Image (cartoon, rainbow, N blue to C red; front, side, top):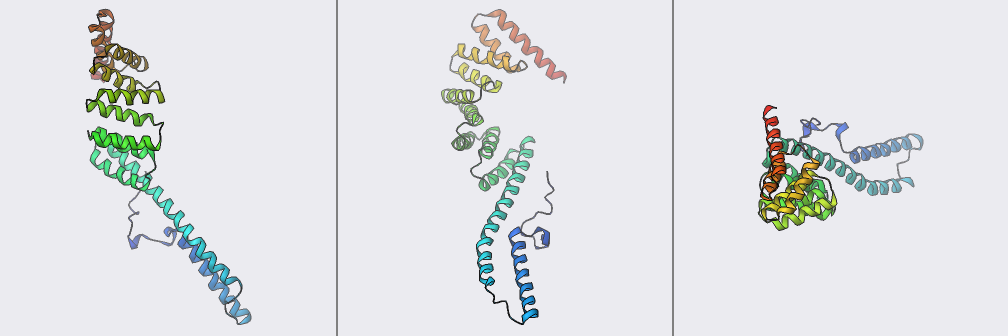
Length: 253
Protein backbone atom coordinates (compact mmCIF):
# COMPACT_ATOMS: atom_id res chain seq x y z
CA UNK A 1 0.00 0.00 0.00
CA UNK A 2 1.35 3.40 -0.90
CA UNK A 3 2.35 5.92 1.75
CA UNK A 4 -0.40 8.53 1.95
CA UNK A 5 1.09 10.85 4.58
CA UNK A 6 2.03 13.46 1.95
CA UNK A 7 -1.20 13.22 0.00
CA UNK A 8 -3.35 15.52 2.11
CA UNK A 9 -5.63 17.46 -0.25
CA UNK A 10 -5.79 21.20 0.10
CA UNK A 11 -2.39 21.53 1.85
CA UNK A 12 -0.54 24.42 0.16
CA UNK A 13 2.78 23.28 1.65
CA UNK A 14 2.33 19.89 0.03
CA UNK A 15 2.46 21.03 -3.60
CA UNK A 16 5.65 21.04 -5.63
CA UNK A 17 6.21 21.58 -9.33
CA UNK A 18 6.47 17.84 -9.82
CA UNK A 19 3.09 17.25 -8.18
CA UNK A 20 1.15 19.89 -10.09
CA UNK A 21 -1.63 18.46 -12.28
CA UNK A 22 -0.48 17.59 -15.79
CA UNK A 23 -2.70 20.18 -17.48
CA UNK A 24 -1.20 22.97 -15.33
CA UNK A 25 2.32 21.92 -16.26
CA UNK A 26 1.26 21.73 -19.93
CA UNK A 27 -0.26 25.22 -19.87
CA UNK A 28 2.87 26.52 -18.18
CA UNK A 29 4.96 25.05 -20.98
CA UNK A 30 2.78 26.70 -23.61
CA UNK A 31 2.95 30.08 -21.88
CA UNK A 32 6.72 29.75 -21.57
CA UNK A 33 6.85 29.02 -25.28
CA UNK A 34 4.79 32.10 -26.05
CA UNK A 35 7.05 34.27 -23.92
CA UNK A 36 10.17 32.87 -25.56
CA UNK A 37 8.69 33.42 -29.00
CA UNK A 38 7.81 37.01 -28.08
CA UNK A 39 11.35 37.72 -26.86
CA UNK A 40 12.86 36.12 -29.95
CA UNK A 41 10.68 38.15 -32.26
CA UNK A 42 11.59 41.39 -30.49
CA UNK A 43 15.26 40.58 -30.62
CA UNK A 44 15.23 39.64 -34.30
CA UNK A 45 12.84 42.08 -35.87
CA UNK A 46 11.62 44.36 -33.07
CA UNK A 47 8.04 43.21 -33.65
CA UNK A 48 5.59 41.92 -31.13
CA UNK A 49 4.12 38.46 -30.92
CA UNK A 50 1.20 39.35 -33.16
CA UNK A 51 1.88 36.67 -35.75
CA UNK A 52 -0.58 34.47 -37.66
CA UNK A 53 0.26 31.60 -35.29
CA UNK A 54 -0.88 33.29 -32.09
CA UNK A 55 -4.65 32.86 -32.61
CA UNK A 56 -4.06 29.21 -33.46
CA UNK A 57 -2.04 28.64 -30.28
CA UNK A 58 -4.62 30.42 -28.11
CA UNK A 59 -7.43 28.31 -29.57
CA UNK A 60 -5.31 25.20 -29.01
CA UNK A 61 -4.87 26.11 -25.35
CA UNK A 62 -8.61 26.70 -24.95
CA UNK A 63 -9.49 23.36 -26.54
CA UNK A 64 -6.84 21.21 -24.92
CA UNK A 65 -6.97 22.54 -21.35
CA UNK A 66 -10.41 21.08 -20.43
CA UNK A 67 -9.44 17.68 -21.84
CA UNK A 68 -6.21 17.62 -19.90
CA UNK A 69 -8.00 18.77 -16.76
CA UNK A 70 -10.58 16.01 -17.13
CA UNK A 71 -7.89 13.35 -17.65
CA UNK A 72 -6.01 14.60 -14.59
CA UNK A 73 -9.16 14.46 -12.45
CA UNK A 74 -9.93 10.92 -13.63
CA UNK A 75 -6.42 9.77 -12.73
CA UNK A 76 -6.71 11.36 -9.28
CA UNK A 77 -10.13 9.76 -8.73
CA UNK A 78 -8.87 6.31 -9.70
CA UNK A 79 -5.93 6.60 -7.32
CA UNK A 80 -8.22 7.70 -4.48
CA UNK A 81 -10.76 4.96 -5.27
CA UNK A 82 -7.99 2.34 -5.14
CA UNK A 83 -6.61 3.75 -1.88
CA UNK A 84 -10.04 3.73 -0.22
CA UNK A 85 -10.70 0.17 -1.38
CA UNK A 86 -7.40 -1.09 0.03
CA UNK A 87 -7.91 0.67 3.36
CA UNK A 88 -11.51 -0.55 3.55
CA UNK A 89 -10.45 -4.15 2.95
CA UNK A 90 -7.80 -3.91 5.68
CA UNK A 91 -10.45 -2.66 8.14
CA UNK A 92 -12.88 -5.37 7.01
CA UNK A 93 -10.26 -8.05 7.68
CA UNK A 94 -9.83 -6.63 11.20
CA UNK A 95 -13.59 -6.79 11.80
CA UNK A 96 -13.93 -3.00 11.91
CA UNK A 97 -17.01 -2.99 9.72
CA UNK A 98 -18.38 0.48 10.54
CA UNK A 99 -15.08 2.12 9.55
CA UNK A 100 -14.80 -0.05 6.43
CA UNK A 101 -18.32 0.93 5.37
CA UNK A 102 -17.44 4.64 5.45
CA UNK A 103 -14.51 4.08 3.11
CA UNK A 104 -16.41 1.78 0.76
CA UNK A 105 -19.27 4.30 0.63
CA UNK A 106 -16.88 7.07 -0.42
CA UNK A 107 -15.31 4.76 -3.00
CA UNK A 108 -18.76 4.01 -4.42
CA UNK A 109 -19.40 7.75 -4.87
CA UNK A 110 -16.17 8.06 -6.85
CA UNK A 111 -16.90 5.02 -9.04
CA UNK A 112 -20.67 4.41 -8.89
CA UNK A 113 -20.70 1.97 -11.83
CA UNK A 114 -18.24 -0.52 -10.29
CA UNK A 115 -19.94 -3.77 -9.27
CA UNK A 116 -17.05 -4.89 -7.03
CA UNK A 117 -17.37 -1.77 -4.87
CA UNK A 118 -21.09 -2.46 -4.42
CA UNK A 119 -20.25 -6.05 -3.44
CA UNK A 120 -17.79 -4.74 -0.84
CA UNK A 121 -20.60 -2.64 0.62
CA UNK A 122 -23.04 -5.55 0.49
CA UNK A 123 -20.70 -8.05 2.11
CA UNK A 124 -19.57 -5.65 4.83
CA UNK A 125 -23.20 -4.82 5.67
CA UNK A 126 -23.94 -8.54 5.81
CA UNK A 127 -21.09 -9.06 8.29
CA UNK A 128 -22.37 -6.10 10.31
CA UNK A 129 -25.88 -7.64 10.20
CA UNK A 130 -27.30 -4.67 8.32
CA UNK A 131 -29.45 -7.00 6.26
CA UNK A 132 -31.57 -4.52 4.30
CA UNK A 133 -28.49 -2.56 3.26
CA UNK A 134 -26.70 -5.79 2.34
CA UNK A 135 -29.55 -6.80 0.03
CA UNK A 136 -29.83 -3.31 -1.47
CA UNK A 137 -26.15 -3.04 -2.35
CA UNK A 138 -26.04 -6.62 -3.63
CA UNK A 139 -28.96 -5.89 -5.95
CA UNK A 140 -27.16 -2.74 -7.14
CA UNK A 141 -24.16 -4.92 -8.00
CA UNK A 142 -26.44 -7.33 -9.87
CA UNK A 143 -27.99 -4.43 -11.79
CA UNK A 144 -24.48 -3.39 -12.90
CA UNK A 145 -23.40 -6.99 -13.56
CA UNK A 146 -26.38 -9.33 -14.09
CA UNK A 147 -24.04 -12.35 -13.93
CA UNK A 148 -22.75 -11.53 -10.44
CA UNK A 149 -22.94 -14.88 -8.66
CA UNK A 150 -21.51 -13.23 -5.54
CA UNK A 151 -24.33 -10.66 -5.56
CA UNK A 152 -27.00 -13.37 -5.58
CA UNK A 153 -25.11 -15.29 -2.88
CA UNK A 154 -25.11 -12.28 -0.55
CA UNK A 155 -28.83 -11.75 -1.16
CA UNK A 156 -29.44 -15.41 -0.32
CA UNK A 157 -27.41 -15.29 2.91
CA UNK A 158 -29.17 -12.11 4.02
CA UNK A 159 -32.59 -13.64 3.31
CA UNK A 160 -31.72 -16.68 5.41
CA UNK A 161 -31.00 -14.34 8.33
CA UNK A 162 -34.29 -12.59 7.56
CA UNK A 163 -35.89 -16.07 7.69
CA UNK A 164 -37.28 -15.58 4.20
CA UNK A 165 -36.11 -19.01 3.10
CA UNK A 166 -38.03 -19.13 -0.18
CA UNK A 167 -36.43 -15.89 -1.34
CA UNK A 168 -33.07 -17.20 -0.12
CA UNK A 169 -33.38 -20.40 -2.16
CA UNK A 170 -34.31 -18.43 -5.27
CA UNK A 171 -31.25 -16.18 -4.95
CA UNK A 172 -28.88 -19.04 -4.08
CA UNK A 173 -30.13 -21.16 -6.98
CA UNK A 174 -29.37 -18.23 -9.28
CA UNK A 175 -25.88 -17.92 -7.79
CA UNK A 176 -25.28 -21.66 -8.28
CA UNK A 177 -26.44 -21.56 -11.90
CA UNK A 178 -24.08 -18.68 -12.66
CA UNK A 179 -21.09 -20.22 -10.89
CA UNK A 180 -21.44 -23.94 -10.10
CA UNK A 181 -19.13 -25.80 -7.79
CA UNK A 182 -19.00 -23.41 -4.82
CA UNK A 183 -19.27 -25.30 -1.52
CA UNK A 184 -20.55 -22.29 0.44
CA UNK A 185 -23.51 -21.87 -1.92
CA UNK A 186 -24.50 -25.54 -1.57
CA UNK A 187 -24.23 -25.29 2.22
CA UNK A 188 -26.50 -22.24 2.41
CA UNK A 189 -28.99 -23.95 0.10
CA UNK A 190 -28.97 -26.95 2.42
CA UNK A 191 -29.67 -24.68 5.39
CA UNK A 192 -32.57 -22.98 3.63
CA UNK A 193 -34.17 -26.21 2.41
CA UNK A 194 -33.84 -27.73 5.90
CA UNK A 195 -35.62 -24.74 7.47
CA UNK A 196 -38.72 -25.21 5.30
CA UNK A 197 -38.79 -28.97 5.78
CA UNK A 198 -37.46 -29.95 2.35
CA UNK A 199 -35.09 -32.51 3.83
CA UNK A 200 -34.37 -34.46 0.67
CA UNK A 201 -33.30 -31.28 -1.13
CA UNK A 202 -31.26 -30.30 1.93
CA UNK A 203 -29.48 -33.69 1.95
CA UNK A 204 -28.71 -33.30 -1.75
CA UNK A 205 -27.25 -29.83 -1.24
CA UNK A 206 -25.19 -30.85 1.78
CA UNK A 207 -23.82 -33.88 -0.05
CA UNK A 208 -22.73 -31.49 -2.79
CA UNK A 209 -21.10 -29.27 -0.19
CA UNK A 210 -19.02 -31.99 1.50
CA UNK A 211 -18.01 -33.37 -1.91
CA UNK A 212 -16.66 -29.94 -2.83
CA UNK A 213 -15.23 -29.23 0.63
CA UNK A 214 -14.65 -32.44 2.65
CA UNK A 215 -13.37 -30.36 5.60
CA UNK A 216 -16.60 -28.40 6.11
CA UNK A 217 -17.54 -29.44 9.69
CA UNK A 218 -20.93 -27.72 9.84
CA UNK A 219 -22.06 -29.38 6.60
CA UNK A 220 -21.09 -32.84 7.91
CA UNK A 221 -22.96 -32.20 11.16
CA UNK A 222 -26.16 -30.96 9.49
CA UNK A 223 -26.03 -33.77 6.94
CA UNK A 224 -25.62 -36.33 9.74
CA UNK A 225 -28.69 -34.97 11.52
CA UNK A 226 -30.81 -35.11 8.38
CA UNK A 227 -29.66 -38.61 7.48
CA UNK A 228 -30.53 -39.81 10.98
CA UNK A 229 -34.04 -38.37 10.59
CA UNK A 230 -34.32 -40.16 7.25
CA UNK A 231 -33.46 -43.47 8.95
CA UNK A 232 -30.03 -43.76 7.28
CA UNK A 233 -28.23 -44.43 10.53
CA UNK A 234 -24.95 -45.77 9.18
CA UNK A 235 -24.45 -42.81 6.87
CA UNK A 236 -25.52 -40.46 9.63
CA UNK A 237 -22.97 -41.97 12.02
CA UNK A 238 -20.21 -41.57 9.44
CA UNK A 239 -21.04 -37.90 8.89
CA UNK A 240 -21.24 -37.13 12.61
CA UNK A 241 -17.95 -38.90 13.25
CA UNK A 242 -16.35 -36.87 10.47
CA UNK A 243 -17.71 -33.70 12.06
CA UNK A 244 -16.27 -34.68 15.46
CA UNK A 245 -12.88 -35.46 13.93
CA UNK A 246 -12.73 -32.14 12.09
CA UNK A 247 -13.73 -30.23 15.22
CA UNK A 248 -11.03 -31.98 17.24
CA UNK A 249 -8.49 -31.17 14.56
CA UNK A 250 -9.48 -27.48 14.62
CA UNK A 251 -9.13 -27.38 18.42
CA UNK A 252 -5.61 -28.81 18.15
CA UNK A 253 -4.48 -26.11 15.74
